[in-house]
Image (cartoon, rainbow, N blue to C red):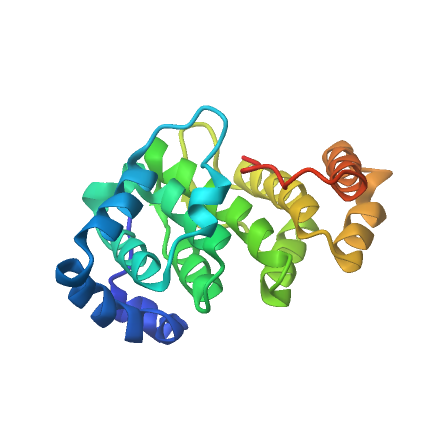
Length: 218
């Protein structure tokens, strides 16, 4: 699997976060080691019910900058899925650019951790979409199958099967957006696509309840 360097990510819109936060995060390693350690512990954890939302939403700018740097480390690929979700839930400026650039940098045959990160990144877009129209547009293109098949594979998943998997994941993630346009996109496909129908029902369940959003849809 190929992961682009931060220099390459900056060329794809990374400036909003990495151009500033990578410097801040480097300094923060001395200024607030306890805070960075807490962020690191959060993304290293194994969660059977999803990444803890409250902890992720409480991440500050320095912690987010540090986690963004973790995405550059291929030896931390096991943690990349949690990092992507944490960045989205924290919702600091630049999160969309980082998640989009990471997903766009994946190619070739993915490891199990790489496949998890890809799917988690789609879910991350769902969390971002509630406040960022770019994330909703990113999901809608994939939920409707309007983009080319990604140049990735994982075991038996390749070509059209990858596109199908990502289309279904994007439809489920749109349920998190909770916007009228996201609902309309799901409703348009619900009659002919069972996954879209399930996502629409989940959208309405979330809208009707006062419960917090699910921690992740994978």
